[in-house]
Length: 196
Image (spheres, helix red, strand yellow):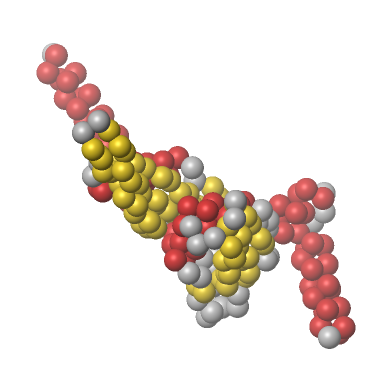
């Protein structure tokens, strides 16, 4: 009898593990930066590694994490776990680009992110490219200003992405319909073209 109960628990454990593996398989993780860090102790220096990882499902969810350990694989694992806990959802237009231009900053890191027409691709450097690829954005133009520190650049682009709003979100906030918001935006574009 006891053995049957154990096998049921074992089966449940295996099912939990399979669910966790499936959940992990849906995410793409990108290693952005590895840094060797030193801790000065009585006998000299003790070296470790710090990793910055970006994780996303390529369908509008993305997160980043930072992990430190004595070995590189362990630092990457810790960073990946932290990234999965800090996922944010970003509304995408047609599943390939952003809805509007947005700016973000963190410390000395500043970024400008613009939507782009189909076929443009991801025009972004280093850490920003990793974030957009994990997010699942196919067409975007971005420019990083200020620092080139990958930690601040990633935090700046996350600040920008959190300020991204879809027409549905704007319509809900204003108590209007989505069609009204979109028609007003199209009307403003027409006026700008006529003025030029």
